[in-house]
Amino acid sequence: MVRRTEQILKARAGKVIPNGMYGHQSVRLLPESFPQFFNRADGAYLWDSDNTRYLDLMCAYGPNLLGYREPRVEAAVARQMALGDTMTGPSPLIVDLAETLVAMISHADWAIFCKNGTDATTMAMTVARAETRRRKILVAAGAYHGSAPWCTPVPAGTLAEDRAHLISYVYNDIESLEAAAAMAGDDLAGIFATPFKHDAFQDQALADPDYARRARAICDAKGAMLIVDDVRAGFRLARDCSWSTIGVEPDLSCWGKSFANGYPISALLGSDSCRAGAGAIYMTGSFWYSAVPMAAALETLKILRETDYLEHMARLGERLRSGLAAQAGAQGFSLRQTGPAQMPQILFADDPDLRLGFGFAENMLARGIYMHPWHNMFLCAAMSEDDIEFALTAAGAAFADLAAVRATLKPHPVVSAMMKSRAAHA
Image (cartoon, rainbow, N blue to C red):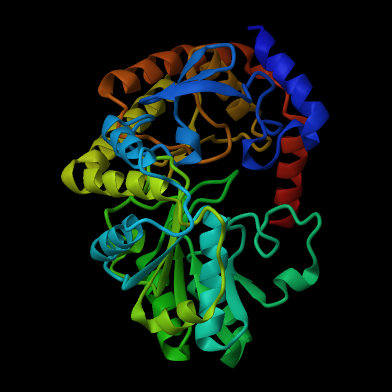
């Protein structure tokens, strides 16, 4: 398929944007055919710049929870937009939203609002240090917590000093966690954890309850802050903090992506254990107090409380998972489908350089399904059983085509080199 508008846009972007695009929105690590630009979105679908429609299994990398342009959310946005958005001070909605989140999230006693997940995670680290007056922060190796110098996965332009007081441990490995805490000694300010292991390019793993409880116990014994980074998974596993499902409450939790159904807002929620630290720091932004995203968040959270959105997504995810497994097996493929069904990671067994994953994703794209060959995906509440059947019908044909050309597939050169490097250092 020739995408003329896409090609023109990419050529223009290459002249005025470094690399033509940046961050996670760059498609340089995706198959060549993947579109970079999109004209519109509605419900579970989006249209690229050449107006080709796709069922979107990335959901904007998470922010689309209820469906693009969800009517109730859009009505709340329009009402607030008619009154004002970014003003000299926040609207009263900031208090309403803080009260709503504190009521919904069991560990939370207070809330601070920002814009991006990186804002929230960086602020969590800062609050933990302000509260404890210590420096060391434990982070799981390979976990993604944002793009600030202390956590970006691409270290260009950063300094060793940016991570001088970070100590890594292996997710779900209690012995490794304990060793990292011992290394921190009396200087431990906090432990970062994602709700489950959702690192790119590899299988996902749910949190071991014993590991989560041990992290909580270490923080309690040392007077450190336990931080759950719920930016990616928030409200996709539970209507509470994700670790509520295993009975562990953090001191701080970081939120973003989905709780305003795509409108730009994130949050740091905390317990009274670190209220003083939160009050002591200074972090702000010109747009952190904007009222429109808060209106969107309030309506989104109301919908989450009133509907079975979560159970609906889980049912659809299980149907997609079982259908893909059966279709892959019929064509001689074996899939590794890991993580929560509503946040699926789909990789091929015996595919060390991801050439099968890339070939499948590209084939699915040609059939109107936007999926990702190495990042976890997302379902949204606007998806229906018919949408899942559409995806499975496309997948049946894609697996058959993939089997026919399997011997001729070539790896993506950059991703292949990356995977070889990861394997060498494993």
